[in-house]
Image (spheres, rainbow, N blue to C red):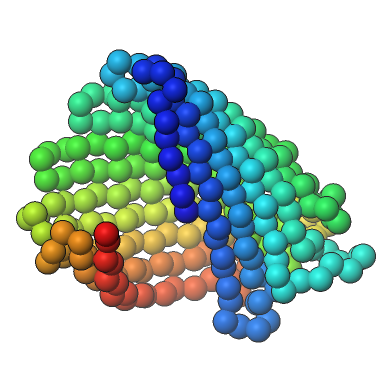
Length: 252
């Protein structure tokens, strides 16, 4: 992922970025859901003296399923193209808090299965608050779509809330947590989704605790513990999982 910003004038800022995301499955039965997503975005915003901004932004996204070959009559396509555009805002509420938000009109098109096309709205708002000199808190509210596909749906509408507190214990040690709750609505062609128009609905809650240690400015070591539970009106989709991870990051 690469991104950059440029001040055209002291009051007008242009931003642009692009990236590639890959998702792969180890289970051969799920490999048709492997996906590669290429995206690019750009925005033009007016910047106030307090460093708040509001503007217009657009994004183009192309998804390809490398392990699919579309055959007429298949329920699911082997690619899609998505275009979105709307308002972007960054508001400095106080010296210790800010809000970043976007609201977009989204159009997604499938070349071979137009019954799965999507036109709708998405919105994401993030609030950052520096509670004390050592404690910060981030809250996110979102209504967005995911490219996830399975035998019941061509895409997923995700509505959720995330809270991320971070405590700077020392200059070298950070404690953080992520609390997340979201509802996944499996949508698409009503003739394909489970249960007709109602379809499959998953409710996912997770809690993550992390400890980060920086022995040197360029080295970060992190240990995390995740507990996630999914409830669904499709019983075979429910699960409870506990995950422990250790990571090391070297920056230049």
